[in-house]
Every structure is written in structure tokens, then in C-alpha cells.
Image 1 (tube, rainbow, N blue to C red):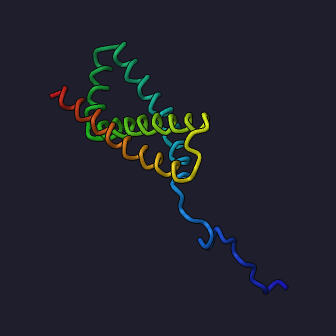
Image 2: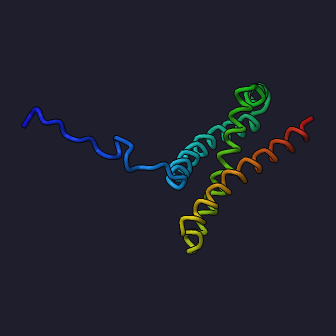
Length: 131
């Protein structure tokens, strides 16, 4: 009996579970929520640097304008827009709209596409205004 190999779970073998956009978006919604909470802490740091002024503000400005700071801000913007749009999608679900599978997939892809477009527009106009 001890030598008998027990079968692995079908989930572990990848036989029954198939990738679904709805589960991916649910996980991503949680990740972006946590990211926004952590990003909010850095926003508070920036606001405190503005309030203090002088060297603190100069340091914060250098950090945000560095390539790593700009990447962080872009990611924060993308997370914010995605989380907002997916939150609206969840509110529509709460109202009873969009629960059927075809609509859920269409709105899921729409959140991804609109999130990318809106983030791109925000950064296009922000960089255009800064120049």
C-alpha cells in the first residue's frame, strides 16, 4: 500500500483548469489595490516634502523625475486607471448587469484596452504640458 503512487490533483496537472480572464482580472484587481495603497504612502511623502520645502522638495523632485521614479509613476497611473475601470465593472455587476460569460469577457477586455488608452492619454498630455 505504501508503494502505491497517489494521483496528483487535476489542477496540479493542468488537465481541468483553463486560464480565464475573469480570474486573472480578479487577482490583478487585488494587486492593483495593494499597489495603490503603497503608492499612496509615497504620495504622502511627496506632499510632506512640498510642505517642508527646500532640500526635501529638491530631493523628492529628483527622485520622481529619475527614470525609476517615472516608471513608478507610470505604473501607479496604470494601476489607478485599471482599478477604477474594473471597479466600475464590479459596480455594474452589483447592479445585475454583465454577469453572463460573453459580456463578462467583453467588459474584461474593454477594461484592459481602455486602461491602456486612458493611461497613454494621461501621460501624453502630462509630458506634452511639461515640455
